[in-house]
Length: 620
Image 1 (cartoon, rainbow, N blue to C red):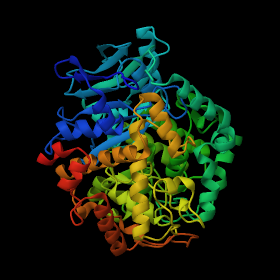
Image 2 (image 1 turned 180 degrees about the horizontal axis):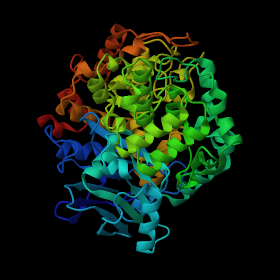
Image 3 (image 1 turned 180 degrees about the vertical axis):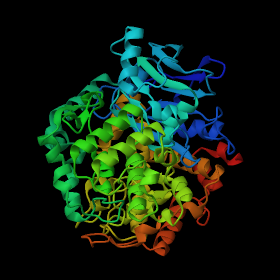
Image 4 (image 1 turned 90 degrees about the vertical axis):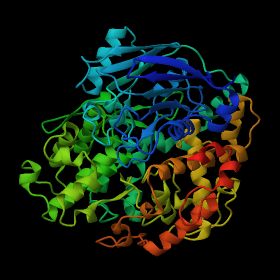
């Protein structure tokens, strides 16, 4: 079987037993990998009454269909389970090298269940798996833990997916960190890992992922190696923070807990400023020539930042920078180091800090609550201190570790007005008042607010749509702040493509065309597939996620935006248009209908389940 090992490792942490599950080609053709495998196992095995932090939850590490094949973009993998943030479908996707190493070590996925009596880590080398004691590693930050395990195993080339103290303490948005600097950040999978007393998964593999047409794979790989500079040089030069100045100019830079879309300190935290001040290197992911990752170092009287933990991406700079009113890159880099070392989602953590800052400025929190911190927007040292408190679950940090919805309920006094979540997951650093298709995506996303399986409305706000859109059957330009059936259709097909990327293990920053993605899948698997079948696979997966969420208690009532998105920015802006609940609700109905779900409830219909060959799910 080309493209896969055909083996999925099942680990019962309660009994400390393992078995290998073998799957056939048709299984992989339906579910591909990554998000598809996670959705399948959760829907099959995790019931409505399962507490996300109980032994009955699953924790699934899954490579994609292309993960580990030496071609640009194939370094991504996924980790999933029932989310402790919202009790629904949980998944985080991550780059780096661990996913490729896991596949090269002999497994397409690892599925954990149960809970170990004492801390353990899983060691996999060339198909042989072993649970090893981790009592001596519990409490360690990432770098200390990784070095200790490498020395213990005598394997300097091993790759890691691990949790820090925040995961051990089950901060509800704790992350799983790969190789110290690549974060599977969203939906709280680090907390699920901590609840199972699982400190790390460590892999080393020397076997290539089998491919159907080695020459075709090599030709595609050579194409991107040859052409990436003309297509993605700015991503290498400035990384994801390269757009900060432009977002400010367009009024799309989240500022002071999304109260504004422009930040007066934008230049100081821009990609250009990062490059010219604290950047010391550029890192990358498996088989990728672009090397867009930032590596920073700070060593002064105020902050010391270890380059082993990489450097801040755009989301991190937005969350801890403009959205906290902080224009000090050193402080942002320190917060990033704390999050990577202790295992926290930088988006959710930054949003928790900005929420607390707004509460403080409105008198709902005082220095008695903050441990003496003057928690005002712009106070970089206070932002860093509160980030550490969240990681340690100390003082106010312990309350914020439960998520901003829970914190707002405890604080009271109208604090819920300052939460920017959908389905419990905080907004990423993208202003949906300027992108109404993205707003719909935040609402109907199976993981809560997320940008990685969403639409970028700017691509449709042009005189003529690009070739990529036309390939998906979208032909007509639509303004960015229009919420019409045409926009809903564009979102639906783009979301299916994004879920396909997550099942493939494909990075969104590699400038492959949709047709090239089909070529890559065919070269690896030999399936002779086409774009229609692959897009149907994305649709199958997101429909399974919807079923899981509805079984877990989600309803249409939760498919809504927070109050702030229907309000103007405080200082005025360039492109923002508040979203009315009425137009959003109408778009949700249209989206349900286009997906083949019940137009009023959002429940996938029996005919749709049969069309997608997942009728087995109808019994639930």
